[in-house]
Length: 86
Image (cartoon, rainbow, N blue to C red):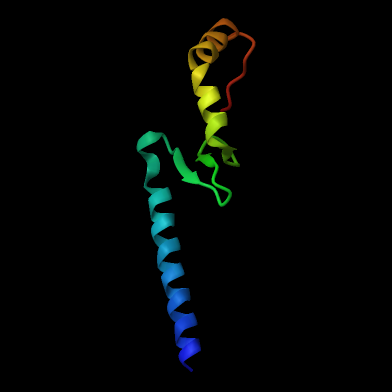
């Protein structure tokens, strides 16, 4: 019986953790609905850009951020050929 109550306690704790995480995700509208999470494998996932999260490892994000200005310039240069998602 003691093992069962421990399992029940663990399940309740996990349920509370998931409820809090869900509430945090719902309240993340301050950045246009974007939220950040660390994946199970230790990568950074950005939620809210599309149906699925964009997940990259730290060094991949840092490489991408290094060329941030180049990406912005590319978008501006190719604006007429790029589509927007409605």
